[in-house]
Image 1 (tube, helix red, strand yellow):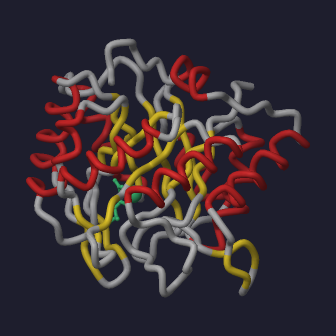
Image 2 (image 1 turned 45 degrees about the vertical axis):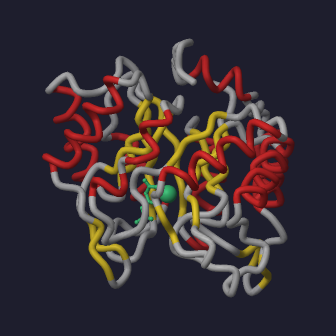
Amino acid sequence: MEKLIITAAICGAEVSKEDNPALPVSALELAEAALEAEKAGASIIHLHVRDEEGQPTQNLNYFEKAFDAMKEIGVTAIIQPSTGGAAGMTWKERIQPVSLNPEMATLDCGTVNFGEEIFVNDLPLMRKFAEEMKKRNILPELECFDAGNINNALQLNKEGLLSDHLHFDLVLGVPGALPASVKTLLFMVELLPPGATWTAAGIGRWQLPVAIHTILMGGHVRVGFEDNIYYSKGVLADSNAQLVSRVVRIAKETGREIASPSEARKILNIRKGRK
Ligand code: KMH
Ligand code: ZN
């Protein structure tokens, strides 16, 4: 099996310090959390940013500050900004971090109910994101919250809007979208085209079981506070790195080695020339 790429989704847009005081929000906190997660075994940092009030924002300045802080303290992992932002943001707000020419960025592949809200990703919006990423040689991580989202990604691919290598993130357990279970994970994976790589992320209490099954199935794993703030039932996680470390321990016990950032770049076919 390929070495395991671990993505640390360190902040997200939906949780707050009230939910877990260890949530990183400032540029420095994000950078420190990223470095700690990388040292624990993460090779991708999925990045959302917050303003001074801790509210989600897609403002370029905040992304720039977080990128700079990460570079400054020695983060070498792939920094993957979100273009999803928070439900309700316009596409113009959401697309801002793409102009930093990151190696990767998320590309959300369909409209879904997202808790009490609707996360809007129609095909014309998806095309705009895909075109901009293609132009800038950014590898999109194709975020799929439900089975139909995979079809949308394949439609973009048919239209020539994606890169040669397709990389999916199967996000299972968002309230309103596809629930997490071994059956739904398998169902999603079987819909993927040959040659594609995939990561899976389970929301809330599904983070750990999805990670365990994914390790055994040969996929890659995403953990972190964006998707889950607990270490175990009723016990808050101390840090994103703590969640990454557990995945590393489990993977090693099963004989699956952990990919370094440069190995992750090779697996994902991230070409030189990206920032
Ligand atoms: N916060 C969610 C509404 C992404 O990063 O691209 C969307 C999200 C996906 O987190
Ligand atoms: Zn996200």
